[in-house]
Length: 68
Image (cartoon, rainbow, N blue to C red):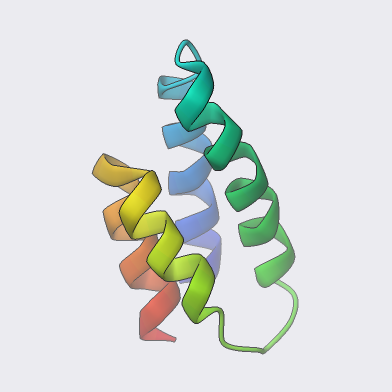
């Protein structure tokens, strides 16, 4: 599930690459989702931030991060 959320975050970042302000939030969240794949810790704050700031696909990615 974490790999699926990482892929959705990459797609979201590429789709909104023309907007600078959301991109300032999406790049660090995408990198944090990449790091979240390997460790077994819960990432509640990352999931909530993905839901709030990366809305269309980030909603699904944030839910996938929160479910685990």
